[in-house]
Image (cartoon, rainbow, N blue to C red; front, side, top):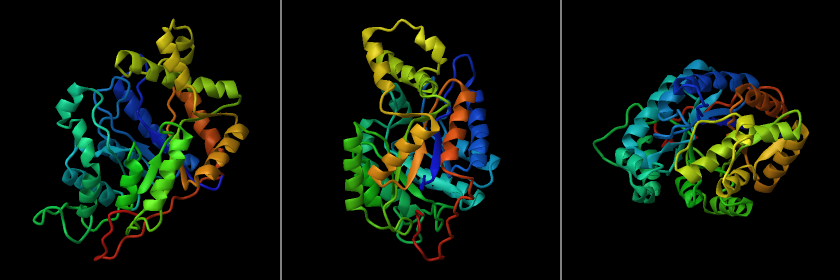
Length: 348
């Protein structure tokens, strides 16, 4: 493979275990990912979800960065509708000041999973419509030029260069292009839709101080094992968790694959479960290597972001070890050069 591999870990909880254990597992996993040579390690934002412990991504990113020394650390992502842009700028400014040249700012436009969560966060569905304006405002806080609020400085963010990434969701590709940010994109409603979104992003991209050229990161579940069937079983816990959420309205902790395979499922549950097992890359190293090479060839991706979760943590780590071997020996991540004092540099 000629592109770097990166990791997004969502701090999934496992049946019978405490959320704190999932967070500690994330930090330990980051150290493992660094040793294996992964390029970036990102954490996510979810609120009031029983199956996810990661609710405060910048806090968790600080713990990850403090436990590692070379790998780039970031968010996949901070959901801007849930936050004031000034606060987000300050948080990433603190992170970049503490861990210079290692912080990524991944941003999304999702709001809470339920009406109750959205009310608690103070962000209803309409807030997603302001995403483009929020991106522009956030970027402006990192420059030495005009600010959204002339008397307000986002310290210590102002003048720092923190790479900006936008997670594609519906119009996310266009928003990333307008902001001059990198694009993070998964399967959306199928590969044709993903390829079309990438094409729109590249066509509309506006060069920025941080990203003079478009940068595409394709994201998805990738499972590698000694056999194709063993790799497929790694996908079972996440597929069932998704099926359960769509039929019960609750995203539960992960169950063991063998327990799920014995569950009596309704026809509707079975349909969602089987759909959740499709569309992912899994198999032996040779099979996965060929599939990823083909995906990168079709998309022209600059990076691959792996988001796989599973109940069996040892088997999951083995999958990431096998995947890392496809990328060759570990390399020291490239660092972002500090900008000139007068350069408007919100992204890199």
